[in-house]
Image (cartoon, rainbow, N blue to C red; front, side, top):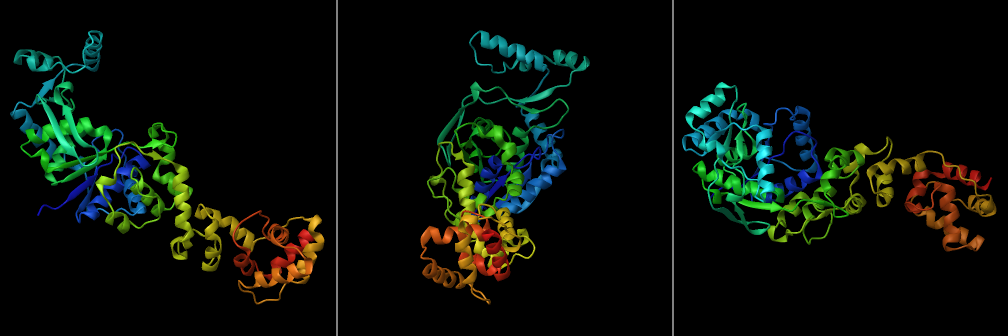
Length: 445
Protein backbone atom coordinates (compact mmCIF):
# COMPACT_ATOMS: atom_id res chain seq x y z
CA UNK A 1 0.00 0.00 0.00
CA UNK A 2 1.09 3.58 -0.71
CA UNK A 3 2.18 5.45 2.40
CA UNK A 4 0.07 8.54 2.96
CA UNK A 5 2.44 11.46 3.00
CA UNK A 6 1.51 15.12 3.46
CA UNK A 7 3.75 18.12 3.77
CA UNK A 8 3.69 21.59 5.28
CA UNK A 9 5.91 23.97 3.34
CA UNK A 10 6.29 27.44 4.88
CA UNK A 11 8.83 29.99 3.71
CA UNK A 12 11.14 31.19 6.51
CA UNK A 13 10.66 34.84 5.54
CA UNK A 14 8.62 35.80 8.61
CA UNK A 15 7.02 34.49 11.78
CA UNK A 16 4.39 31.78 11.52
CA UNK A 17 0.90 33.32 11.64
CA UNK A 18 -2.58 31.90 12.06
CA UNK A 19 -3.07 31.66 8.29
CA UNK A 20 -0.05 29.35 8.07
CA UNK A 21 -1.06 27.45 11.19
CA UNK A 22 -4.58 26.91 9.83
CA UNK A 23 -3.03 24.95 6.93
CA UNK A 24 -0.40 23.24 9.10
CA UNK A 25 -3.08 21.94 11.47
CA UNK A 26 -5.12 20.49 8.61
CA UNK A 27 -2.08 18.67 7.21
CA UNK A 28 -1.01 17.36 10.62
CA UNK A 29 -4.47 16.11 11.58
CA UNK A 30 -5.02 14.50 8.19
CA UNK A 31 -1.64 12.71 8.32
CA UNK A 32 -2.38 11.37 11.81
CA UNK A 33 -5.95 10.39 10.86
CA UNK A 34 -4.69 8.47 7.82
CA UNK A 35 -1.83 6.82 9.69
CA UNK A 36 0.62 8.58 7.41
CA UNK A 37 3.55 10.98 7.64
CA UNK A 38 3.91 14.74 7.75
CA UNK A 39 7.04 16.31 6.31
CA UNK A 40 8.19 19.85 7.09
CA UNK A 41 9.76 21.51 4.06
CA UNK A 42 11.28 24.94 4.42
CA UNK A 43 10.85 26.74 1.11
CA UNK A 44 13.93 28.92 1.50
CA UNK A 45 14.99 29.53 -2.10
CA UNK A 46 14.28 33.25 -1.55
CA UNK A 47 17.75 33.87 -0.20
CA UNK A 48 17.25 37.62 0.24
CA UNK A 49 14.30 37.28 2.62
CA UNK A 50 14.84 33.88 4.26
CA UNK A 51 16.39 34.02 7.73
CA UNK A 52 17.59 31.34 10.09
CA UNK A 53 15.73 32.85 13.05
CA UNK A 54 12.45 32.46 11.14
CA UNK A 55 13.29 28.85 10.27
CA UNK A 56 13.93 28.07 13.95
CA UNK A 57 10.83 30.02 14.91
CA UNK A 58 8.63 27.95 12.58
CA UNK A 59 9.79 24.72 14.18
CA UNK A 60 9.36 26.14 17.70
CA UNK A 61 5.84 27.40 16.95
CA UNK A 62 4.72 24.12 15.39
CA UNK A 63 6.07 22.16 18.35
CA UNK A 64 4.34 24.56 20.76
CA UNK A 65 1.08 23.98 18.89
CA UNK A 66 1.49 20.23 19.35
CA UNK A 67 2.34 19.36 15.74
CA UNK A 68 4.96 16.67 15.14
CA UNK A 69 6.56 15.82 11.82
CA UNK A 70 8.68 12.97 10.51
CA UNK A 71 11.47 14.93 8.91
CA UNK A 72 12.59 18.46 8.03
CA UNK A 73 14.42 19.47 4.88
CA UNK A 74 15.30 22.72 3.14
CA UNK A 75 15.04 23.52 -0.52
CA UNK A 76 18.36 25.36 -0.38
CA UNK A 77 20.00 21.96 0.16
CA UNK A 78 18.49 20.51 -3.02
CA UNK A 79 19.63 22.90 -5.72
CA UNK A 80 21.42 20.12 -7.60
CA UNK A 81 18.20 18.14 -8.03
CA UNK A 82 16.39 21.21 -9.35
CA UNK A 83 19.17 21.78 -11.87
CA UNK A 84 18.84 18.19 -13.12
CA UNK A 85 15.07 18.56 -13.49
CA UNK A 86 15.49 21.89 -15.31
CA UNK A 87 17.93 20.30 -17.77
CA UNK A 88 15.39 17.57 -18.41
CA UNK A 89 12.71 20.12 -19.26
CA UNK A 90 15.12 22.04 -21.50
CA UNK A 91 15.95 18.86 -23.37
CA UNK A 92 12.27 18.18 -24.00
CA UNK A 93 11.64 21.71 -25.22
CA UNK A 94 9.34 22.59 -22.32
CA UNK A 95 11.71 25.07 -20.66
CA UNK A 96 12.75 27.93 -22.93
CA UNK A 97 14.96 31.02 -22.48
CA UNK A 98 13.53 34.53 -22.35
CA UNK A 99 15.28 37.89 -22.45
CA UNK A 100 12.59 40.53 -22.01
CA UNK A 101 13.10 42.97 -19.16
CA UNK A 102 10.41 43.77 -16.60
CA UNK A 103 9.84 47.09 -18.36
CA UNK A 104 9.35 45.38 -21.72
CA UNK A 105 6.94 42.85 -20.24
CA UNK A 106 4.96 45.60 -18.49
CA UNK A 107 4.68 47.50 -21.79
CA UNK A 108 3.36 44.35 -23.50
CA UNK A 109 0.75 43.84 -20.79
CA UNK A 110 -0.39 47.45 -21.02
CA UNK A 111 -0.78 47.14 -24.77
CA UNK A 112 -2.82 43.96 -24.39
CA UNK A 113 -5.13 45.60 -21.88
CA UNK A 114 -5.69 48.57 -24.17
CA UNK A 115 -6.81 46.07 -26.84
CA UNK A 116 -9.08 44.40 -24.24
CA UNK A 117 -6.93 41.28 -24.30
CA UNK A 118 -5.84 39.15 -21.35
CA UNK A 119 -2.29 40.12 -20.27
CA UNK A 120 -0.84 36.68 -21.07
CA UNK A 121 2.78 36.28 -22.16
CA UNK A 122 2.89 36.09 -25.97
CA UNK A 123 5.74 33.52 -26.18
CA UNK A 124 7.78 35.89 -28.28
CA UNK A 125 10.95 34.26 -26.95
CA UNK A 126 10.01 31.00 -28.67
CA UNK A 127 10.19 32.75 -32.01
CA UNK A 128 13.76 33.94 -31.49
CA UNK A 129 16.35 32.49 -33.80
CA UNK A 130 19.67 31.15 -32.51
CA UNK A 131 21.31 34.28 -33.93
CA UNK A 132 18.94 36.55 -32.03
CA UNK A 133 19.57 34.63 -28.83
CA UNK A 134 23.30 34.89 -29.39
CA UNK A 135 23.12 38.67 -29.87
CA UNK A 136 21.03 39.03 -26.70
CA UNK A 137 23.56 37.05 -24.70
CA UNK A 138 26.47 38.90 -26.26
CA UNK A 139 24.90 42.18 -25.15
CA UNK A 140 25.09 40.95 -21.58
CA UNK A 141 21.56 39.69 -21.13
CA UNK A 142 21.19 36.46 -19.21
CA UNK A 143 18.10 34.41 -19.93
CA UNK A 144 15.48 33.45 -17.43
CA UNK A 145 13.51 30.31 -18.20
CA UNK A 146 9.79 29.85 -18.73
CA UNK A 147 7.83 26.61 -18.77
CA UNK A 148 5.76 26.07 -21.91
CA UNK A 149 2.30 25.19 -20.69
CA UNK A 150 0.22 22.63 -22.52
CA UNK A 151 -2.82 23.68 -24.49
CA UNK A 152 -6.05 22.65 -22.84
CA UNK A 153 -6.76 22.44 -19.13
CA UNK A 154 -5.96 20.66 -15.90
CA UNK A 155 -8.86 19.23 -13.88
CA UNK A 156 -9.05 17.41 -10.57
CA UNK A 157 -11.49 16.45 -7.85
CA UNK A 158 -10.51 18.75 -5.00
CA UNK A 159 -10.71 17.24 -1.52
CA UNK A 160 -12.36 20.40 -0.17
CA UNK A 161 -13.81 22.35 -3.10
CA UNK A 162 -14.93 19.53 -5.40
CA UNK A 163 -14.43 19.65 -9.18
CA UNK A 164 -11.86 22.23 -10.22
CA UNK A 165 -10.50 23.18 -13.64
CA UNK A 166 -7.68 25.48 -14.69
CA UNK A 167 -7.53 26.62 -18.32
CA UNK A 168 -3.82 26.67 -19.12
CA UNK A 169 -4.16 28.79 -22.26
CA UNK A 170 -5.42 31.65 -20.09
CA UNK A 171 -2.19 31.71 -18.05
CA UNK A 172 1.23 33.07 -18.88
CA UNK A 173 3.98 30.49 -19.15
CA UNK A 174 5.49 30.64 -15.65
CA UNK A 175 9.11 31.52 -14.99
CA UNK A 176 10.72 28.52 -13.30
CA UNK A 177 14.37 29.61 -13.22
CA UNK A 178 15.64 33.15 -12.70
CA UNK A 179 18.39 34.71 -14.76
CA UNK A 180 20.87 34.03 -11.95
CA UNK A 181 20.03 30.33 -12.15
CA UNK A 182 17.98 30.16 -8.93
CA UNK A 183 14.79 28.09 -9.16
CA UNK A 184 11.39 29.42 -8.18
CA UNK A 185 8.78 27.95 -5.84
CA UNK A 186 6.43 26.76 -8.58
CA UNK A 187 9.18 24.48 -9.89
CA UNK A 188 11.00 23.42 -6.73
CA UNK A 189 7.77 22.32 -5.04
CA UNK A 190 6.96 19.97 -7.89
CA UNK A 191 10.43 18.41 -7.90
CA UNK A 192 10.30 17.86 -4.13
CA UNK A 193 6.75 16.51 -4.11
CA UNK A 194 7.68 13.92 -6.74
CA UNK A 195 10.94 12.98 -5.03
CA UNK A 196 9.34 12.64 -1.58
CA UNK A 197 6.33 10.66 -2.76
CA UNK A 198 3.86 13.25 -1.49
CA UNK A 199 0.35 11.84 -1.81
CA UNK A 200 -1.73 14.75 -0.52
CA UNK A 201 -1.29 18.52 -0.67
CA UNK A 202 -3.52 20.65 1.53
CA UNK A 203 -3.03 24.38 1.08
CA UNK A 204 -4.83 27.69 0.56
CA UNK A 205 -7.38 28.41 -2.13
CA UNK A 206 -5.04 31.06 -3.56
CA UNK A 207 -2.95 28.17 -4.97
CA UNK A 208 -5.65 26.77 -7.28
CA UNK A 209 -4.22 28.30 -10.47
CA UNK A 210 -0.75 27.34 -9.31
CA UNK A 211 -1.95 23.77 -8.80
CA UNK A 212 -3.11 23.58 -12.41
CA UNK A 213 0.31 24.77 -13.57
CA UNK A 214 2.15 22.38 -11.28
CA UNK A 215 0.10 19.41 -12.48
CA UNK A 216 1.29 20.25 -15.99
CA UNK A 217 4.91 20.41 -14.80
CA UNK A 218 4.51 17.05 -13.04
CA UNK A 219 3.37 15.50 -16.31
CA UNK A 220 6.29 17.07 -18.20
CA UNK A 221 8.69 15.49 -15.68
CA UNK A 222 7.21 12.05 -16.40
CA UNK A 223 5.16 11.64 -13.22
CA UNK A 224 1.43 11.19 -12.69
CA UNK A 225 -0.32 14.33 -11.40
CA UNK A 226 -3.28 12.26 -10.20
CA UNK A 227 -0.96 10.47 -7.78
CA UNK A 228 -1.13 13.63 -5.64
CA UNK A 229 -4.55 14.53 -4.25
CA UNK A 230 -5.18 18.23 -3.81
CA UNK A 231 -7.25 20.00 -1.16
CA UNK A 232 -7.59 23.80 -1.18
CA UNK A 233 -8.97 25.55 1.89
CA UNK A 234 -10.57 29.00 1.60
CA UNK A 235 -8.40 31.75 3.04
CA UNK A 236 -9.21 33.09 6.48
CA UNK A 237 -11.07 36.37 6.88
CA UNK A 238 -11.08 38.58 9.95
CA UNK A 239 -14.08 38.81 12.26
CA UNK A 240 -15.61 41.56 10.10
CA UNK A 241 -15.21 39.62 6.86
CA UNK A 242 -12.16 41.53 5.61
CA UNK A 243 -8.83 40.16 4.49
CA UNK A 244 -6.93 38.72 7.40
CA UNK A 245 -3.60 39.37 5.67
CA UNK A 246 -3.60 42.98 6.84
CA UNK A 247 -3.54 41.82 10.47
CA UNK A 248 -1.19 38.86 10.28
CA UNK A 249 1.62 40.58 12.20
CA UNK A 250 -0.66 40.89 15.21
CA UNK A 251 -1.79 37.28 14.74
CA UNK A 252 1.55 35.54 14.66
CA UNK A 253 1.78 32.44 16.84
CA UNK A 254 4.65 34.13 18.65
CA UNK A 255 2.40 37.04 19.58
CA UNK A 256 -0.52 34.83 20.56
CA UNK A 257 1.77 32.76 22.76
CA UNK A 258 3.12 35.91 24.42
CA UNK A 259 -0.45 37.11 24.95
CA UNK A 260 -1.21 33.91 26.85
CA UNK A 261 -3.25 31.86 24.40
CA UNK A 262 -3.03 28.16 25.24
CA UNK A 263 -1.68 25.97 22.41
CA UNK A 264 -4.45 23.42 22.83
CA UNK A 265 -7.05 26.19 22.50
CA UNK A 266 -5.50 27.52 19.30
CA UNK A 267 -5.13 23.98 17.92
CA UNK A 268 -8.78 23.13 18.58
CA UNK A 269 -9.94 26.49 17.22
CA UNK A 270 -8.00 26.19 13.96
CA UNK A 271 -9.02 22.55 13.56
CA UNK A 272 -12.73 23.40 13.80
CA UNK A 273 -12.58 26.71 11.92
CA UNK A 274 -14.38 26.38 8.60
CA UNK A 275 -16.34 23.32 9.72
CA UNK A 276 -19.78 22.92 11.33
CA UNK A 277 -18.16 21.37 14.41
CA UNK A 278 -18.46 23.22 17.72
CA UNK A 279 -15.48 25.03 19.20
CA UNK A 280 -14.71 22.81 22.16
CA UNK A 281 -11.52 21.82 23.98
CA UNK A 282 -10.06 18.69 22.39
CA UNK A 283 -6.73 16.90 22.29
CA UNK A 284 -4.73 16.44 19.09
CA UNK A 285 -5.70 12.77 19.02
CA UNK A 286 -9.40 13.57 19.39
CA UNK A 287 -9.21 16.12 16.59
CA UNK A 288 -7.31 13.73 14.33
CA UNK A 289 -9.81 10.94 14.94
CA UNK A 290 -12.70 13.14 13.79
CA UNK A 291 -10.86 14.74 10.85
CA UNK A 292 -13.00 14.73 7.71
CA UNK A 293 -12.59 16.70 4.47
CA UNK A 294 -16.37 16.50 4.06
CA UNK A 295 -16.72 18.75 7.12
CA UNK A 296 -14.71 21.55 5.51
CA UNK A 297 -16.75 24.37 4.04
CA UNK A 298 -16.06 25.95 0.66
CA UNK A 299 -16.92 29.33 2.22
CA UNK A 300 -14.16 31.46 3.74
CA UNK A 301 -14.20 31.18 7.56
CA UNK A 302 -13.71 34.13 9.88
CA UNK A 303 -10.95 34.14 12.45
CA UNK A 304 -12.54 35.79 15.48
CA UNK A 305 -10.19 36.53 18.41
CA UNK A 306 -13.23 36.69 20.72
CA UNK A 307 -14.14 33.11 19.81
CA UNK A 308 -10.56 32.00 20.38
CA UNK A 309 -10.48 33.73 23.76
CA UNK A 310 -13.74 32.06 24.76
CA UNK A 311 -12.27 28.67 23.88
CA UNK A 312 -9.07 29.56 25.71
CA UNK A 313 -11.19 30.27 28.79
CA UNK A 314 -12.82 26.86 28.57
CA UNK A 315 -9.44 25.18 28.24
CA UNK A 316 -8.13 26.95 31.33
CA UNK A 317 -11.19 26.12 33.41
CA UNK A 318 -10.25 22.44 33.35
CA UNK A 319 -6.48 22.73 32.95
CA UNK A 320 -4.50 20.77 35.55
CA UNK A 321 -2.02 22.59 37.76
CA UNK A 322 0.88 20.73 36.16
CA UNK A 323 0.07 22.28 32.77
CA UNK A 324 0.43 25.85 34.04
CA UNK A 325 2.61 25.69 37.16
CA UNK A 326 5.69 27.09 35.41
CA UNK A 327 3.73 30.20 34.45
CA UNK A 328 2.20 30.92 37.85
CA UNK A 329 3.67 33.36 40.39
CA UNK A 330 6.19 31.95 42.84
CA UNK A 331 4.41 30.30 45.73
CA UNK A 332 1.15 29.66 43.89
CA UNK A 333 0.18 26.03 44.43
CA UNK A 334 -2.42 23.61 43.11
CA UNK A 335 -5.06 24.78 45.61
CA UNK A 336 -4.67 28.35 44.38
CA UNK A 337 -4.91 27.31 40.72
CA UNK A 338 -8.05 25.27 41.33
CA UNK A 339 -9.60 28.24 43.13
CA UNK A 340 -8.95 30.86 40.44
CA UNK A 341 -8.85 29.06 37.07
CA UNK A 342 -12.61 29.34 36.55
CA UNK A 343 -12.29 33.14 36.43
CA UNK A 344 -9.41 33.41 33.98
CA UNK A 345 -9.28 34.18 30.28
CA UNK A 346 -5.48 33.92 30.30
CA UNK A 347 -3.00 32.33 32.69
CA UNK A 348 -1.31 35.71 33.12
CA UNK A 349 -4.44 36.96 34.92
CA UNK A 350 -3.65 34.56 37.77
CA UNK A 351 -0.99 37.01 38.98
CA UNK A 352 -3.64 39.51 40.01
CA UNK A 353 -5.47 36.92 42.10
CA UNK A 354 -2.22 35.81 43.68
CA UNK A 355 -1.70 39.41 44.80
CA UNK A 356 -5.23 39.35 46.22
CA UNK A 357 -4.46 36.14 48.08
CA UNK A 358 -0.90 36.78 49.24
CA UNK A 359 -0.57 40.57 49.13
CA UNK A 360 -2.29 43.44 50.88
CA UNK A 361 -5.77 44.73 50.05
CA UNK A 362 -6.97 48.01 51.55
CA UNK A 363 -10.51 49.16 50.77
CA UNK A 364 -12.42 51.82 52.74
CA UNK A 365 -16.11 51.02 53.26
CA UNK A 366 -17.19 53.44 56.02
CA UNK A 367 -20.87 52.97 55.19
CA UNK A 368 -20.46 49.26 56.04
CA UNK A 369 -18.34 49.75 59.16
CA UNK A 370 -20.87 48.35 61.64
CA UNK A 371 -21.51 45.27 59.53
CA UNK A 372 -17.81 44.60 58.97
CA UNK A 373 -17.15 44.82 62.72
CA UNK A 374 -19.89 42.23 63.22
CA UNK A 375 -18.18 40.06 60.62
CA UNK A 376 -14.83 40.49 62.39
CA UNK A 377 -16.31 39.50 65.74
CA UNK A 378 -17.81 36.32 64.25
CA UNK A 379 -14.72 35.31 62.26
CA UNK A 380 -13.90 31.64 63.09
CA UNK A 381 -10.54 30.67 64.48
CA UNK A 382 -8.15 28.64 62.33
CA UNK A 383 -7.51 26.00 61.04
CA UNK A 384 -9.61 26.82 57.96
CA UNK A 385 -10.81 24.76 55.04
CA UNK A 386 -13.43 25.54 52.40
CA UNK A 387 -16.24 25.07 54.95
CA UNK A 388 -15.20 28.19 56.86
CA UNK A 389 -16.95 30.55 54.44
CA UNK A 390 -20.33 28.91 54.89
CA UNK A 391 -19.95 28.66 58.67
CA UNK A 392 -18.95 32.30 58.93
CA UNK A 393 -21.63 33.75 56.64
CA UNK A 394 -24.36 31.59 58.20
CA UNK A 395 -23.56 32.99 61.62
CA UNK A 396 -23.30 36.51 60.21
CA UNK A 397 -26.67 36.20 58.50
CA UNK A 398 -28.37 35.27 61.75
CA UNK A 399 -26.84 38.18 63.67
CA UNK A 400 -27.10 40.89 61.02
CA UNK A 401 -30.34 39.85 59.36
CA UNK A 402 -28.69 40.38 55.98
CA UNK A 403 -28.84 37.97 53.08
CA UNK A 404 -27.88 37.59 49.41
CA UNK A 405 -26.00 40.57 47.93
CA UNK A 406 -26.36 42.74 51.03
CA UNK A 407 -24.48 40.05 52.95
CA UNK A 408 -21.87 38.91 50.46
CA UNK A 409 -21.00 42.05 48.47
CA UNK A 410 -19.41 44.08 51.30
CA UNK A 411 -17.36 41.06 52.33
CA UNK A 412 -16.08 40.50 48.80
CA UNK A 413 -15.12 44.17 48.43
CA UNK A 414 -13.37 44.26 51.79
CA UNK A 415 -11.47 41.00 51.28
CA UNK A 416 -10.54 41.20 47.59
CA UNK A 417 -11.10 44.78 46.45
CA UNK A 418 -13.08 43.38 43.51
CA UNK A 419 -16.76 43.37 42.58
CA UNK A 420 -16.59 39.76 41.45
CA UNK A 421 -14.15 36.92 41.13
CA UNK A 422 -13.40 33.39 42.34
CA UNK A 423 -15.64 31.87 44.99
CA UNK A 424 -14.74 33.15 48.43
CA UNK A 425 -15.22 29.72 49.97
CA UNK A 426 -12.09 28.70 48.02
CA UNK A 427 -10.20 31.98 48.45
CA UNK A 428 -10.74 32.45 52.17
CA UNK A 429 -8.48 29.57 53.37
CA UNK A 430 -5.78 30.77 50.96
CA UNK A 431 -5.94 34.35 52.24
CA UNK A 432 -5.70 33.20 55.84
CA UNK A 433 -7.19 34.61 59.04
CA UNK A 434 -4.50 37.19 59.73
CA UNK A 435 -4.95 38.90 56.36
CA UNK A 436 -8.74 38.70 56.61
CA UNK A 437 -8.59 40.47 60.01
CA UNK A 438 -6.35 43.25 58.64
CA UNK A 439 -8.59 43.76 55.62
CA UNK A 440 -11.82 43.90 57.64
CA UNK A 441 -10.28 46.35 60.10
CA UNK A 442 -8.98 48.56 57.30
CA UNK A 443 -12.32 48.54 55.47
CA UNK A 444 -14.27 49.32 58.66
CA UNK A 445 -11.94 52.23 59.42
